[in-house]
Length: 296
Image 1: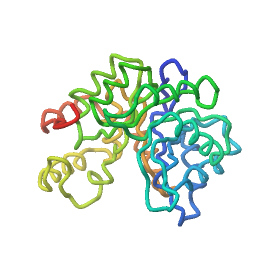
Image 2: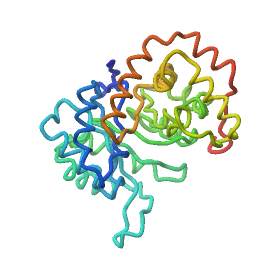
Image 3: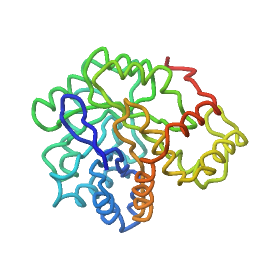
């Protein structure tokens, strides 16, 4: 497994990260899934306070307690759960972030978070106070670095103009190449790196029945799927190679709910190392790029 450094933080993240959202409270496998990931060289774990109303952070914290120093731990903030359990509300205010981090630290059973991310964001958010909260937490040693999770080009430009986030998480895969137009070029001019979510398109290009996705109908998705499955390597390998081909991408955060899925992910990463550049170029020539229609 290769590792990439996140800007000034000196944090080294594995090129594949484990998306812990897929872990389930109904299963007893969360610890074994995380252990399998670490054994496979995946040292970067991504969770959020929102996932399963805090259970996910607790499960991750318990699983890594004895190996905390070997793991790069990321979590997210910004979705405030309602007291009556009816849902959550968006809250990017400084006061809430400073309070929420304490709850995450407690659930994760750690005294610091490697990467603390804002779990969304709109152009109307109070960015000055939001970003100030992250800087305060860095100064206090409670977080090592911060980032945002957003697909919106206008939000990304705004944040980059005001601060130096270590990461920006966004969806990117063969069916969603929108970041190539505006987001990636803007981020490449900064010190930030991209964390990719949705690299496997929820299995749509692996083994799921084709259906519409963004501006593609089911028949178009089937053409994508046929291309990926007609190669001499696994679909997982191609999707990993595709995502990591972008220089600005530091890691693909991929969800897994079983040890078998982790093993398939790790095997795909190994195979991806030998996929030739010509295969990617052929794909890019064969299929069109989609663009953002809003939030530009």
